[in-house]
Length: 359
Ligand SMILES: [Zn+2]
Image (cartoon, rainbow, N blue to C red):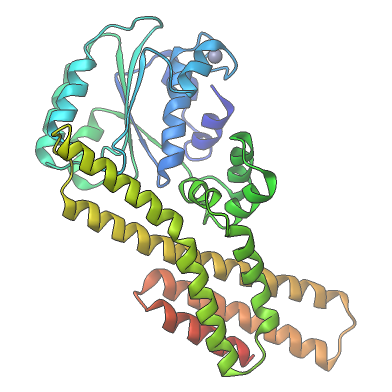
């Protein structure tokens, strides 16, 4: 089993013998994890383990072909940010009946199975496929979440829950994927633990500069309300420019969608569905970006506290310690408000910076 897959599943389900998954495979697996980039990678590593004679050595030709998505018996079906049509699911079902051409199994990987246009009808079609599988076919389905409608599909699969990656693991992966170490570090640090977000940030030239700006904020807060307000404007302008990369990605998606509709006459998700999803992604990006800012600020105050422990105690050092501690409290509360309420971003930040400048 490749090391990566082992680590992803290992912590979540230590009691399960991982080898059993690949040595006596069943016809369908459902990999569930909150980070779609991680889930997809895990699905490919799992497929490699099923095909490879050495249980997924990660080194041989078979493993390499699977991981590079070039293996003739491993089909990866991506929803490409859209939702599955019932016809597409039926087509995958038909394809799944083919015998493997080369290796032991014919593997069908289908991502984001939680996203379907027709809901229950699509799941019924999928269920039919899973109930009458071809002898040599294995399905690896992936999902970000497990909505209630998926329960019948889930009951036909071995459910494998994946944990998220740590910032260090994301950094390492980005470097393995060819990223330059400084950008990889910055993208991983600002990723909120999401490989999907880290890959977007890697395309974002401004992430290193943003990290530096976030780090400079505690130094620049000087007790003046006007300074706090200026800083909020500066932060928001940075987030606006950072979101450009995601907006470019959205424009690409929309162009593909239009081509499908106009040239290939494929009915994919509706324009409304795309708009709703893209709006959600934009909002999530902003929330994650502010979350990144809060973590960087907390890091600055924590290192201030660590430095104060080294110096002899005085009234002044005690006061600075108290101030750093209440700044950290403030940051924790702001984080709770960020994720727990729909508080307007400008208001949230103004409130935070004004309060920080009063410490
Ligand atoms: Zn191998």
